[in-house]
Length: 566
Image (cartoon, rainbow, N blue to C red; front, side, top):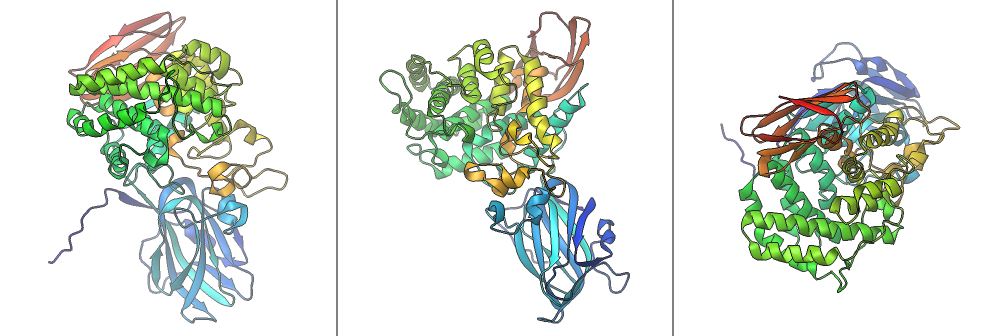
């Protein structure tokens, strides 16, 4: 048998799912409950009728389906019979996807509803005994309507097609607090959905590879699945299309994040050959970046971007970029030492010393304060006390959420970090989220309706009315991988896992339960899973662990009273 040979193979798998519930119908609709049945994926000749949509005039018959959770993929529309006055044997169906109920009900152009990056609102021409599949996007809800006047269709099935990678369960975290557990699983699921051919930012909008946005998602991937190949593939994509004298994704800070992400990957995966393949590019890039350090040590990058919520705070952006430059040069110096390039190692160390002459103010920004603390430019406890802790979850951002939590962890404030996590990420769950969003502010909670309910008079439509900058209203992505910060925080600061050497051959175990009674989890290393169990015993924290062969564990504690046992 002759086979065609393609140049690549899709690494993903497909799973078929049925709707979870019928949200609402409009016009003449009968038999809609059959759409909730698990049916064979083949239109039969004969058999019982399906869901009948019928239009006598201009009133559009339609049905809104809820699949129960957001996912990435397409929809297959199975039509037994179709007929319309305009074209006998055929009919036009209106398909409209939504990450929220509001989005699934809103036509293009209203409330900034768009087809950006993936079609979510279009007409599908259907014939009798046809099964048609839509494009891929991110959605939970889908509206199927009969767009033609004087028409009738018999829908046999509307099937969701979930498309993603077949990943084994490796790292995990659980504790006595079910709200924290729900936040962890939602963060992990959000990143999983964005692990498509490449590591995307969002599954509906921004189905793109952004170098800065990789970093928080990378932290989650490494904590759950280890050094997955998708990270190499995604980091290499931007290197291949960007000269070292240019800026990745057009943003200077994203070239800094690219360097920082490589250090993180090498420390976790220990893949020296892969690191060596970046050597020439890194050498050229750090010399290019060094040209934007002023005589007094102040960063002079030509672009100002830290994250969207700081866009109107240039002083905070400068402070964050100063910290990112310190981190990028410091981590690149370590990588150059690993590669045996003493000249570039020394060059990077000199840039760190130049940059450390300036310690800018975070100007009230939790994001900037966190980066200053993590870079060592400022004291973590001071930044937490002065800037990060006041207001709790107010002032967080999704992109730099991990950085803010990590800064609190470095300050020894695990309890405060857990409280902020419950407040900030937990609020999205309270609004019906099954994935974490591109952006979120706690003041959006005031009089807000849930995203999994029909818009209610007197309640604010949090998806259709909120958002800003490039993600205003319904253009806002409700599944963004950069929002997964709680997952790696729980693994790194509650379980306390820190890799001291490439590939995790030496690991520091420095746990902190905060206000939790117990916690446990598995952390992946190239040599196997490290298991950690923490229990509060009166005033003491009992720590039990089991390390893979070949992994040396050094024990410490962020809490005063702890006992350790293998």
